[in-house]
Image (cartoon, rainbow, N blue to C red):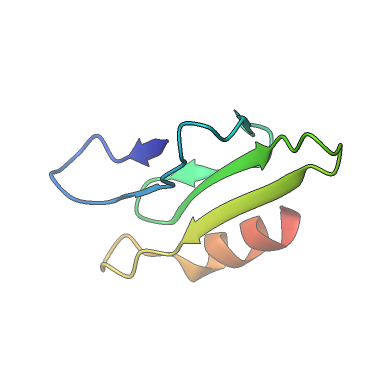
Length: 78
């Protein structure tokens, strides 16, 4: 599962998941604002009923687009 920037050859986030693991993409909590806040979140569906939410968050640090004033409030909202 990957989310990537459309404006270049680099950047984005990804989670590698084994084929035998049942999961659901969590669009409701995954935020992807290129060059500012890049994340992807999933719920791993466990047979025992105890599901696991997993997320990956990346804060790009490439000037001049990086904006900590947007990144921090977004992180706290999630």
